Amino acid sequence: NAGVMQNPRHLVRRRGQEARLRCSPMKGHSHVYWYRQLPEEGLKFMVYLQKENIIDESGMPKERFSAEFPKEGPSILRIQQVVRGDSAAYFCASSAGGSNEQYFGPGTRLTVT
Amino acid sequence: DAKTTQPNSMESNEEEPVHLPCNHSTISGTDYIHWYRQLPSQGPEYVIHGLTSNVNNRMASLAIAEDRKSSTLILHRATLRDAAVYYCILRDGNQGGKLIFGQGTELSVKP
Image (cartoon, rainbow over all chains, first blue to last red; front, side):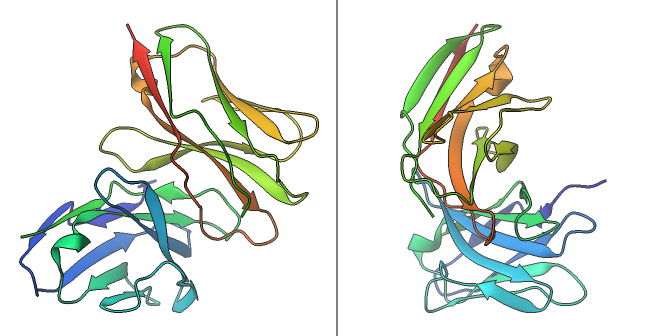
């Protein structure tokens, strides 16, 4: 049973470009969460999605960031017009239910030059 | 979500038990105590969780104080692979959803 998969593992973007981060949850999981870990900082919640719905986006920056989890395919975290401050590790997690334990992917390390 | 307090760092010797404490004096009746850990350059990993009774699994044991205001994660025999940041997190069982990570305890294991 494959775990949570994220790709790409490393992503380099120039300032002003778009970044698309993909997350495939564990088989049978319909709940997906995105977290961000800035250099030398802790993990911060960004958004919680359940198939086609955003349940909680209280941690998402107001501009440039969006997330989706379509009926088919992976969840996507999209960052438009990236800036250097967006450089971080982005982790996706999935769970079978909203109160179940979360299983994390290996992360995507975004570097903005 | 209620706040937890953990020591910033702890040291252990390989093959010895490790007791990682967590204080959560404002815990509510529906809050579960969750532990996750993050190994260097990896995503967090679920360790264990409990509500009132002590819990055991293949990774660790969780000892919960009778008043639930504190808990201890117990690694019975530390290995070098247990070196990680350990996070104690309270999560409302009625709401679920996001995990709120604090600073955690950075555990180092000496051979």
